[in-house]
Image (cartoon, rainbow, N blue to C red; front, side):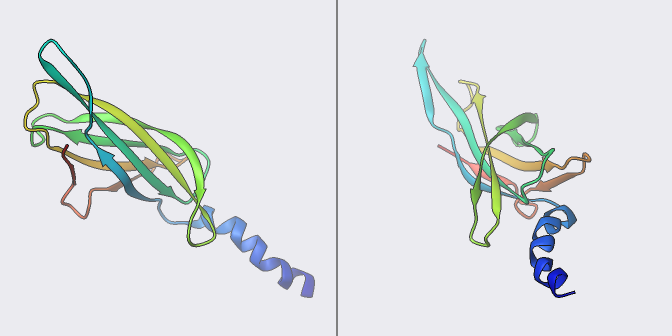
Length: 137
């Protein structure tokens, strides 16, 4: 019995990420830097880094974004970068993506929401509490 009790914290730490009711996502950084110029146009790119918790197999992450007030919606897939330690003794996943912004977009105001899909396909959105995230150069 004592052996089981001593092993309980280790067993729980292995099971808890699998018992999470939903993934958590947040924005680490976003920017719209100039990535080139040519033919009288300046080219921008929407760059996004997000975090996901808990670390778990089968995740996919992405973003829905617009530069025209949601008249059009663009979808982007984020790529897993690495896992990093967090302040709670666990780990977070870091995801990133770069998306081209047409040179005719002016002024550049990118509104976006991020999501993560778990291994069973359940999607969890973060839309900044209904306000969407906003990124400008």
